[in-house]
Length: 538
Image (tube, rainbow, N blue to C red):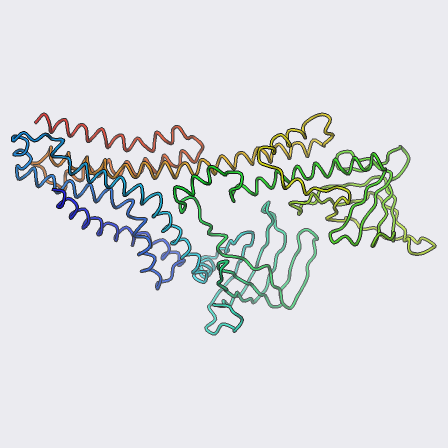
């Protein structure tokens, strides 16, 4: 019986997995993200992941056919009347089911994730097809924080000798660069452009070059016209990073054991560190103004600085210490005073584009400036906004070294009454910390959902084979395909329940998600027990 069961199982699995693998290639082919020459390779890679769905149903089909033939030929009756117990008769089925359970666990936790990753890499490597498909659909190619639009795109049959593997010729091009908050930072537009595709150890790099283009900087509100514009090169692999689906069991466990350092959590963690950095910078500037009566803010590069005197910091406004006085700002070039201004107050908001150093901007209210390089002190113009300044005496290098366990206590210190930190910084710190823990929980729940899904799917194989065998032995006078159909329906329901349970877990309802995921297996087990009891009675 065991040899016949394995033979039918092997043949059925081969047929089913090939059909399902071709089905998996339909979507990439339909949206033109997979070239026709890559179909065979893609299908070959897809066969291994599709085994997780083919094995349970092919094993159930094999058990139904083999046990039905044994029952129809009265071999089961003969073995039973000769004193052989049903547990002995079904021992080969149980042995094959146990072997399938082990195979499914190994397959789902180690082998299948690797092949999912290879399939994603294959799609990422076909950069030209992906870009052409996006253009043909009128969509943008989203790569990291860059969106590239084009009206038409064609492949240059003779790419240049600059190391590029391929060159695309574009018409009606727009490239939009965004920051971490999703806000537009700059935009390049051009009537004609080229895209050079380079491949290397770092993955697929796309370099865009525009001719007679124009650029817009949202932060400065300026428009420039250039004969050649080259926005920052983008790495295609960043848009197709491997997710939990392509991680093995041990990699998922490593993610759950080191959540604060996971790549998807890092932006949220950096937001917490930025809140702490800004709070420390604010406290430092306020302390310097209070103790020495002045503070020096330095531009990036250190050549030019601005010394603020005679003010006190409240929220993000430096006001005069005494009523009726003014705040003085001295501009220095290589420590030499070159210009000064007096004003009623100075606004000091944190720079919105800065994401690490806690840099501030200076906005003087009604400044009266004069040139210090001329003896007569002629009146001079003062910049409306000076951007990206760092406080010279304030070091924030220690913030990046804060351990995970110390983040929450440091943020909670900001809310203390004696911290003196403005409400805006306090709320920003609390909000970023809450988002940090929320993102860690999301990554943890997502990893657990995959582990739960794989475990439930692995157990479905032995349960379906047990149900098929018990139904075939019980209803030996029925058609074998009828019995397989009866076993097939709860098997399909089980797959649906596993997928649904995974989504419920991802929605952060772990308990109900686990119940839903395993309820399909419970139905299979109950159906098998019922069929075996009916077989024993008859």
